[in-house]
Image (tube, rainbow, N blue to C red; front, side, top):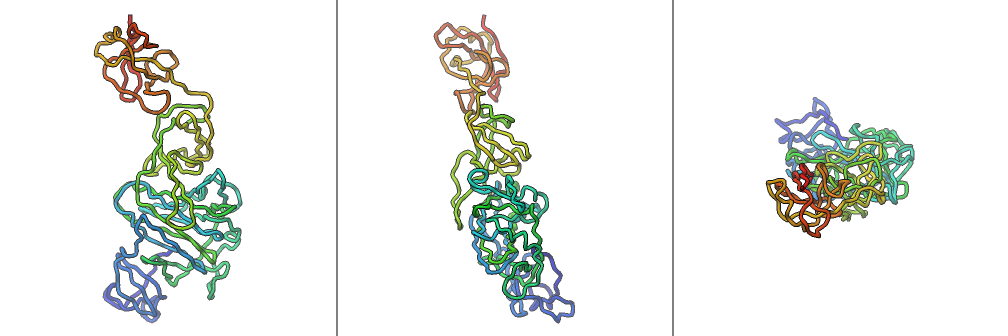
Length: 430
């Protein structure tokens, strides 16, 4: 990653200087490339600084993508303008068919290097540098602030490390990669080089062919409005494509509370997930699933700030009282039919309600409802629903009458419910 470096110039300020130097005696011009200070960026060509321009022109707008292909290697920095909106910033990456490349996103001083891919844990796997399957790329790289390498598996990525050879022309294995900066139209070489070391835990690649990888960066405040995206490509012949969506709420779905078994259960909780994508060039084809597929990241919030069950212990959530979704380390790793478990019992209720607990006892019941209790009629603590499946429940004020059937004869009991659909009081009719 490009670092802050001290340079000297021959003017009153960086905007008015004519040349940038590496020494205080102003005898050695700095290498040709782009340089920035505060909000100004200038390119030095043949020892001469070109016109100053605001750094905003160097940003890539969210909702767009970038494709790049180099015969050499490099560390490629880009600034993405994500605006003032709130939500999850979804980033997609395709790293070509043979050379894996690294990813590191930085927003508001926080770094992000966790990625999954379409088909992960289903038709495809992700393995680390030791060829061991992992739940997602970068799982043992969290909190390090270092790159996670994704794409097609290539043993040379690790065996050629460290990349510390002094470049001598054409790119060779183990050469230091050059720094590049995206300037609004392309990546431009900065004329500086850095040593790169790759560790096994920083690798999360596909052993049977590269896929589109997905990363989430949560944006919960209007500012800052830019993120930095670093693509690390220490191997020669890099090809990569990426796109960044503007912040938006993640798609939601309802399921049961998280549990340790496959037992069927009714939906009570709203969750969120990030769709994966397919393709080899931007714009990628984003999936359209309305509930999470195997390989999707799952969250407890719309911004993607908190992964669901971000632990190594497999847990389940039940969708529509039929499907058990296995979640581990924040990613869906399995999907199967749930077993046995939850059912709802039907009963009938009066059309109206009354403040008097016994007033509805003489009223004929006609409305079909359901409860999740063990008795024939609902009791205190049972939840009331409009249908045999689904998360919806009715609401009423005061006491409504209940009966097992609508054959006539009036209600057998009355009860009240709270805003969450749970019975709070029961009165047994005489």
